[in-house]
Image (cartoon, rainbow, N blue to C red):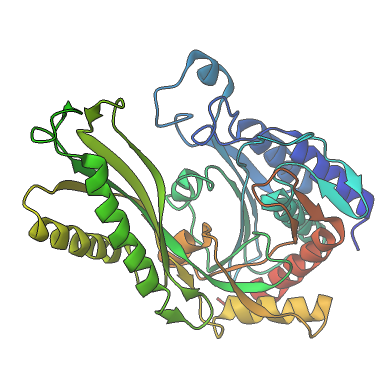
Length: 397
């Protein structure tokens, strides 16, 4: 059993480090400092560890302040096995979203069995659990297979950390410690972003015969997106429900007395297993083609942006069976298989041929003004992860 005071101390240390993703929030520090703390912990636990930079702080041109503060890095530790067993990765992201509206975002305050602060639930609680699990494994009997701990950067934006990790590491399976409330999660949705631009013609507001209203044109596009949303709601996945699409941001026009020459809409589509960016591109192209055919003055440009696939790991997969057996051993027979709506790096690992599953401690307040993780569930998660490694890594490869 892991002492609760030790869990609280490690988790508070992680939460007190500001690791806001600088691609999301100007001035965010990135993962450099927390990656160094994690790498040091892994070294002290007896693992081969390193802190690996993953390139520039941001794809945007950095300000002098950002250049001085932000750094992006993964922390990786390897617990070497004796040979002949299967390898397992514990993967958790070190970056967080911003802290707008939070009174004490980095306090690490413990009250009523809850530890508060940005990233406590998403997902420094899971990271702490995995760190304590590999420490316990390093002090016990040697496993046959390797255990790789990967604390990764940038999951909250474009997953540059896990993408960089996959250039160097492959394991037989992975557990991603996202906050599942100790539910074994085998499926989640993917997503794709797109930008639609309607083109009008600028003119004085008193001369409608000379102008074309790009914002009015975009209203037609929004109507098509609403119809698509209704259609997607009728296509059901057994555990994930329907896909979805929504308008994210919209901008256009310049002043009251002018016809707007351009309107820009950003759209997000949530994907089910079997769907991808081409699925959404076809759906949007159909909407835009119908609008163009109905009015020769309607002009539009479409750009498909960043996308990531959904996750669907069959329950019969060996890592799912091993994790379920371990969770039932520690927590009892009430452990459930489940699914989540949010996207995670597990989908990238799965796409790369590493069967992956989600398992982590619960709490409340993902991305909100008050976030906490349940300390007892962090402890239970650590015990389950350690047991899962023994179960999985000691089986023949």
